Image (cartoon, rainbow, N blue to C red; front, top):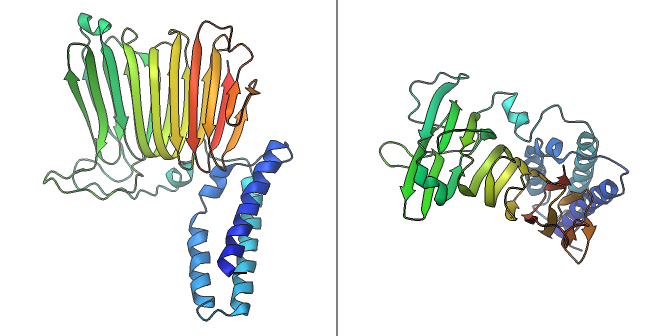
Length: 325
């Protein structure tokens, strides 16, 4: 048997065993603890290249032993209660910032620069569909409060530059708020999505909203109970996502696509909810839901409720939690 197949077999057994023990409530495993030690796998790869250049059986045994010891260490670390609120806490507390911003001349290392953005609200906006495109790497986004403006954002900026633009048609307003990764000369700015920025977002309660949220790595905590959210699309990598959906519309769609992430979604108890999953090795915890078919879950009141929430989850090694409130 090839050594590479043994390695992948051991890794899959480890991940599958942890997920099974979690589902059986034998252990409580925090994947965010493991994520902070990802450089270990680079070391294992280097050891493997050094010891197995000639197909040595001894080298294979030593490499396999190192892998097993590493997985045992991660198994122990994964059961420790996290000291940080989010997946990004490991880097934040060490003040590690790998985002190189060639334009931030007014920001000193380790300090934040406050920037305000706003788009005014017109009476005609009430009848329009409003699309919010929001993106930014290494950024913590929060939305809790409403505003009399159409959109507002208060940015505590440590790295990177943000921009807000608006495009208008007869039936639609499109707002784009993003962190720019370009230099003034138009050349790409190297980024590792670790800016350490904090953004407080506020939106108006009147329009019908569609949200397209994108981030490579970061945090997003949106309480949307006061707002008319028709569709929310999230596409993220190593993200910590918390969303609370309201019941102001008869139908709401939530589509989440992640890589390695922690996703927590709360829906109104009075709304019927259906979840469709395509999650591979992801951990799933859907409190109060009944499994219908392969990959489908529903609340008991799904067929009888007036309001409905449709959730689609697509992710790799992620933790998905859906609950009612």
